Length: 266
Ligand code: SAH
Image (cartoon, rainbow, N blue to C red; front, side, top):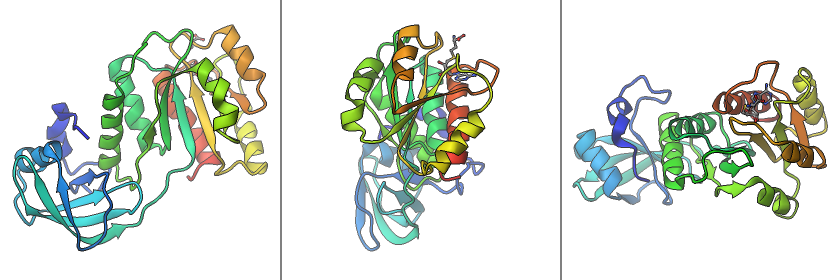
């Protein structure tokens, strides 16, 4: 995945929420004793930015086998080969909680992608609603932010970036495609209070660990038609996130936190 080089400097700071070790996500099988070839971007990062030498330790993880300690076997600007030594952490699947959010402007979109990754969302999917201002989302930028956050924050799994989809289209096919995934519709117009009881009732119904989707609207909020359509669905629950109206990026984090705590893997 192409790295977002603008903040490479801070990438090496030991203050990371991870171990401060260099960690890279690779979309390749990992097991002790094999060699892993990195592409140009990741080689450039290790060799030119971090100036690592042969023998330097690098942690690699993917979305299936866990995290492994490796060292640089051969290095060049174009391709670097790592020798996989030993597994350091087993794969830890993410709680099956999706974040469906109306995309906002670039900087905050990066922020939502990174924070949703840190909060353990299993899938992060932009949803175009009637009042969404942003019409196109650069999927590769979203994916790069997700990978970088996963690397920096010690995840041993990778959230999926879902395709940008119109809310109407998503709801049309939701039943057939998402067998029993419940939509937690963060509704700024929902009656305040009761979200804790609502989520605890869902937990009591056995929804803890079940497939869930958190839906966050755009700056302009949901339209009356969208609200009516969502509220009419069996597989949808409107939840209030308290008496204050938050910006969409703040709401995404708040929602993933409360849902993660009561129905996720906190
Ligand atoms: N402009 C709208 C608010 C949009 S806030 C208005 O003034 O009503 C953007 C999104 O964040 C909302 O669509 C909702 O999904 C979420 N959100 C923000 N504050 C919330 C709250 N207190 N309760 C539930 N959802 C909230």
